[in-house]
Image (cartoon, rainbow over all chains, first blue to last red; front, side, top):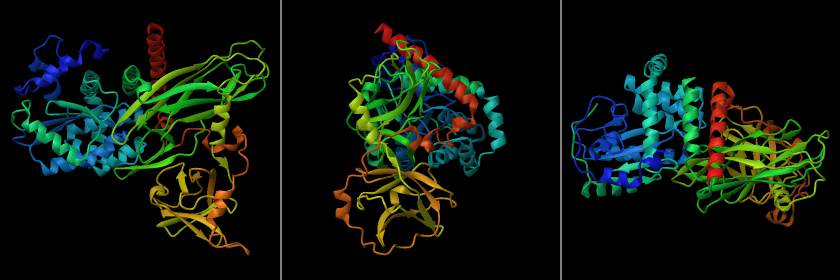
Length: 223
Length: 331
């Protein structure tokens, strides 16, 4: 339904925007349909609730829409990690989009909750390294491996339930807006695509994003 | 409860999104549209992947998601568990998945109680959830499919032959084998009667974390076939699964035991030609009793532990179904 309201054309316009917008320190709500393009862009890239890895002086942003149980997401997890290790000017924004059932949703919810104890990236890695199908025991084991305080995680999951729920809803809206039927989905610079990649393919996309008119200008680093 | 509500939102949203025909189309077919009261017929979900897309076996392997169905039917109709053909191995990015790469049928047995009067409508509806993937993309798919059955004389329909062919592809139960392990390598000894192509035989376990199926090798020793591979985790009790060479397939259990001593008169090595000459015992008509161990979702399924999810999913299923039906009606 969202897709019907916000056409891909509008999204293309959003992506065509070259100027980055200052970071706001509060939740970026979904803009009105006729909102300025800059506002739409912020909706995708400057969501303070969305976990991210943002090195100082980054010049390309990758947004990933993914599910912890999706085989193709698992297959491109390692290449993505390698890319970030090699290229220290890439920002990665994690858009958890649990579409493969309850265990995926549970994993996404707890992964996001772990960001309140600054463990998101470690927990994210551990979840992708856990043999599927995920269940509560395996999620708990992954949390332990990532050094997550399980009791605190449960508390944060409750305290921040509304924020997490709204973030997941925004992620879902965005994924639908850009026409994703499944995972993983990527926005690299101003180009969106459906499907996992190898390290070499990620590198080509990042290179193109840097060359392209739409490459994001550096912003101040976030934690 | 919040989680259950989320499940509802997301599954429902997704249900409205992806069109199965673009990935793996699912269609519900029956051996007879007019099953005779007191009889059991074959029904099936006919999966037709677009080129490049695959679906998953009952145990999808390291990654992926098994298809599931939730049936709704009158009380006089009972439907058994989904029966899969043997899978094939797909290794991507270091992960091994057990998949169905081409068109395939997931079978089930549908029984109509003797008490049903001929002419009675006995519609059976399945809410089917399945995943379609390529090496780089995965799409969750959902459909509500209905068979408009009417109790009758059991006359076979147009899909009867396809269903019977599918039944011949469901691995038949074979006698148990044994496994032996030194803690690192697990050796699965097949019962002597099975004749498989040694170059292609593979074991697909029902549960992960026991045996590394992708790294396994087939050995012929003293006239017996064994499949050896890295053991994962602690010693299991009984190891269940399907052994297949792509042409012959058997469902069997391996029980702990010493390696069976070679029998006198056996030839070594197992003649490869022998595997080619045979057809296995004539493909038996599968009866529900041959597949007892697959009767329920695997115990590792999170749903079995988290009943609130089931409610959420069930709710979502209803919403999804309604949306699809509404969309279809409109369209």
